[in-house]
Image (cartoon, rainbow, N blue to C red; front, side):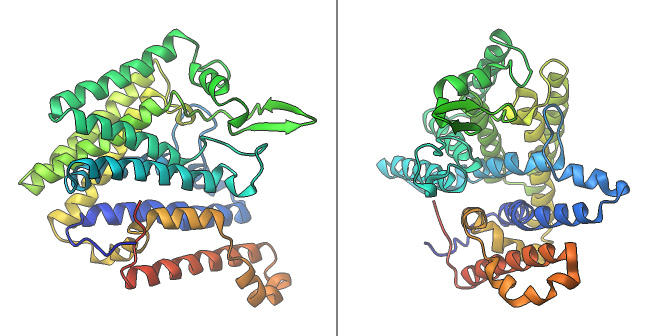
Length: 367
């Protein structure tokens, strides 16, 4: 735990806080409410709070890329604070902790059962690998020109492999083949039954080959961070961020004409398209908060943003439902379908209160 760094980029903390708030509170609550209401005219909103089955891109598909992008934004600021071997120690430590927390959240590590252990299956682990790739690039190629060249080579490598050794279908893409071959029984979606391992027909998220594009997403964030760190004119920085976002969105759509936007395999077009949306979000928040000095009413999001890893992990591994269930069980028959909504809302409030106490006492989990 460390104390608050007063030189932090306020727009980054608030945008990260919004992303986590939507992920652990607003999104699940609103999705459950829309499910209970079951109103056809609201089906569009419910769809936006779920992942695209294969091709396409919904609002909910942006949550993970934005989380990864913001990990990259902070890198030019954080890496500049360390010298010599300390920087490598920090990188190894962060990669290990993120991978470990990812295993806690989605790798079934707490089950202590090798049959259910999943090695690489979570957002935090994707951030860890993306961060590692981006760190190698940033530390070994000091100029923006070479950083862009190496990032482009990663993009070309993934694109070429996906085109040369398969198609863009759920079962026929090369990223799926690589995951099945390398992760095998340790892959998420694998089931153990009657002494036989079998791959789920419905699980098509890929991780090993997709790591190349995880690194690109983090690098896009690092480029945004460099713009805000080195540019002396904040309004010009915001303009560059915005125009870059527009260019990437258009590029993603164009690439998507050949290689569709598919979040589950982190396709090349999805990497560009989601990266463009992340640039646009960063530009808007940076302009509004850091350029014109507005956004005080958004400061409460720092409660989530400055303890984002803690909020993410705790929301997935600890259930606080027993507390509201003990308090409100008498309302179950009265509220009917809305009773689980009350319980979940109360659970979210408990987590928020814990985060608030940590924020108030300047306790921040750092990895």
